[in-house]
Every structure is written in C-alpha cells, then in structure tokens.
Image (cartoon, rainbow over all chains, first blue to last red; front, side, top):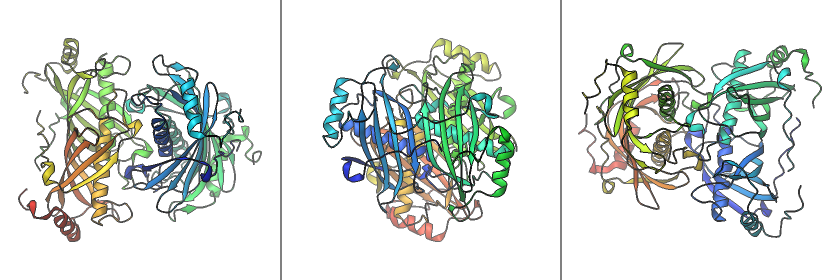
Length: 153
Length: 153
Length: 153
Length: 153
C-alpha cells in the first residue's frame, strides 16, 4: 500500500491526554468499534485540546481537516472508557499536523494511532485562511520545547 | 507531514461506482460534511461493491479495516447525491487495498479521495483469517486485467 | 404507559413518500436498525418534503422539533431501501404536526410509525417564531382538501 | 396533537442518574443538539442503568425498544456535560416502561424528557421473549418501594 504508517510520538513525549467514552451504539454488527467513530474520537480530542488552549469561540474550530492517516491496531468496543493522546507535531503558516493515540483505559491496549493535517479556515467567510499568530503561539506554548515546530516540512 | 497522499487511479480506469446520499445531519456546524461521514461513505461503497460480487452473507464483511488514508479536497455538504468510485488496487493472501473517490453528482466536484487496507476476518471466531480463495477470485474477475494484483507489495 | 400510540393516516391518504437507504452501520449489535436512526430517517423525509415545497433555503429548516412519538413495529435492518410516507396532519400559527411511516421496499413490511410536532424557529436569531404565512399556505397546497388543518387543536 | 406529554417523575423521586457528554459533532447546522442524539443519550443511560444492575452480558440488552415519547424542552448543545436521570416506572411480564430527563450540568437546564417502553428480547433467537424473573427482581430492588410496579397497566 502506498500509504505510510502514521508517525505518532511515544506516549512519554505527549503531554496532552483526555478521557472519552465510546457509546454502546458505536459498536457495529462486527462487534468492534465502527471505524468512522475513531474520526469522531480524534475530533473530540481536538475539541478538548483547543478548548484548553482557549482557541475555540462558541465551539467553532478555526480550521478544517485536510488529510488523515489512521492505523487500526486492535478491535475497539462500545461502552468503554478511552484515553486519547494529542500532540501537535508541526505548525506552519497555513496548516498544522497532529498525532493521536487511542488507548482503552481498563486494559491499557492501544486501539488506534493517527495523524491529521489541519488547514486554517475562516468560518465567517467559509474559506481557507492562514492560521492566526495567536493560534500558532498558543500551540507552541503547550507543546513546549520538546518538539521543534520548524523541523517538519 | 509524514503521510503520503492516497494514490487513487484515474476515474476512467475505475469500473465500479455507486450513487449514495449524504444526510442533512451529516453536515456539522462548520456547514461542511463532517469528516467522519466520509468513512461511512467508503463503508457504504464497500458494502455495494462486495454485495454486487456476492461476497456478503447477511450483511457480514469478511474483513476488518486495518489502515486508511484520506485526502479532503473540497468541502462536502449534507443532503446531496454523490457518486463513489471503488477500485481494489491490490489483493494479497491476508489483505487487500482499495481506492475511493467521492464526487458530488450535481457539480461534478471531487470532495475526497482515499485508500484503505482491509485484512481478512473470521466473524465466527472474531479473529483475523486469510482472505478466501473465492474472495480473491471474485475481486480479480471484477477488476479485470487492467490492474495487476501482483504488482503491489 | 401514559404515551398514546402515534396516529398516522392510512397510506392511501398520504400523498408524499420518499425513497431512502439505511446504511450498513445503522444496524447495531442487536442486528436491528438502531432506534436513533429512525429519528434521522424522519428528518431526511422532512428534508425531502420541505425541499419539494421550496421551503428550505440553503438546507435550513424554519422550525425545531418540539415533540415526537415513535412506535417500533418490526425490527429494521441496515443496508436496505425504505419508503417513508410523510403527512402534515395539522397546521397552527406557531407549530404543525406531521405523521410518518417507514416501510421496507423489498418486503413491504412497516418498521415504524411516528408523529412529530414542529415549532417555528428563526435561525437568524436562534429563537422561536411563528410559522410564516408562505409556509402555512405551501403545506395546505400539498396536503389538499383531504385533510382539515383547522380540525386539530 | 394526539401524543401525550411524557410523564417523568420529579427529579427528587429518581434515584439513578449518570453523567454523559454530548459530542461536538452531535450539534447540527441549526446549532442545537440534533434530535436523534437524544435517543442515543437515553440508550447510553439505559446502558449505565442496566450495567449497574448487572443485567448486561457482553454489552447485550435483553430487550428491544417498542415505543418512545420525547419532549424537547430547550435547545441542547454539543461538547457539553449532561446528567441523565433514569427511572423504571412500570415492570410487566413482557415489557417495562422507563422515564428519562436530560439536564445540562453547567446550567442546570432541562433539555429533554422522555418515556420508553422496552419489550423482552432473546438475542440468541432474535425474537421477543418474556422479561426474566431475575430482570424483574433486579429492577424492583433498585427502584425500591417508592414506586408501585403493579399500579400501571
């Protein structure tokens, strides 16, 4: 397959994590967490991450998803507590890249790892826009010096 | 970003396509089709593809998703008719790779392209299993000789 | 139970019907259409009904749901074609009442019947508002004289 | 409208409540919690209620939904914490009735009240079945003597 495996930093290097619950109906007839639900878990984790940074006004994300890469490592289940790790691994002028890891709390098992590229979006005018300077600085403050935001392309 | 863009064959080389509808509630508060819904559209397209091949018994997929790569090209909307192209681009002994393209019918605009790797799954015993010979032969029959299933890794 | 059964007119008296598809993932681990999906099917049917009347501007409903009553008659399934009947059974100044029936196309089996009360909503100001005169007249035109909109409370 | 308002006991008389979260994507383009999501919240609350009673084996509900009645009292939002109250208000031989109330934790505002009738279901044979004696006794133990399960029809 031409798609490379998502590159997610080791858990020890990720400082942000959030507890979420999968719902009973998130499990499909194959008795695993339906694949689309992982996209929703990443979105919930982004929501928690950017809320904590004070970057969301009335629930509005200042970006849209441009690209994702997801690796399903173990079958998930509905009705379980999970911890989702989030790291912003690159910040550019118009986009940034994040990495995610979903781990079941009870068993410690990693269900899924993923990367996503987010592009700046102006909800007012419904079009792409550069990431604001405040947005970039907030992310750098939370990600600290353990990550070099200029290293990636 | 470390994730490569999904490699989807040109539309002219893809023989399977299915008409689907996005739902009104698939659109989120950013007034675009929520990103998780694309995973559901790919799943619906897989369902139509494997149903046509007669490979689904009572709605059961004989595989699980192992990996996906999705490129969002234009903002989608709810309540619209879309055409989803599906091609199996590689068939191995335990997994196969598919490519997808979502196009809005009314405008002809491509909203999304993606790749997915599927691994054989035995629903009876809830574990991974090789793809059956019948499964492999059916796919080769529908994909014809325009694609070389042995070329990819 | 204190809840009365929804009163849905016989199919022969309902003039509007729309074909919809349930999705593979709409089926839950009990192997039936998840109950929440019926709410989405009614919403899709409302969307088709009011779109046909020309009453929706850029996907926006000029009302909110105030109350529903749903009777589940037979287990539904994912990946099936259904026909949903819609009738507006009462139009008032601030709200109207609709009735719905979901029937599987292949078997003719009725899965579900429901009623819903919709109250006028001004999306601009995010608050309740009377139903517009145009809205009321459009509904009366489609429902014809077979129904007396002044009979109900 | 022919549908009566759901009869939900006062909060002071309900002993079971569970904290749940609405998701960002649960909010629709009208900027309110989509109506179908309430059905999912009630389902999650049932899941917590019957899990606590030890009545669920591997996530399987021993009943199906037969009827619901929902009253939407205030617009809900995505990304919020809610408390859902659950009371079983009647237990019969083949079905039972529950009442629900959804309250936003931060504001204390009640968004929604509902009733549901559940009928016994045998997942093994995919058909209706009487509620087991164990099921009935467990519910009576949690609901205590404040409710008379023989009073309702």
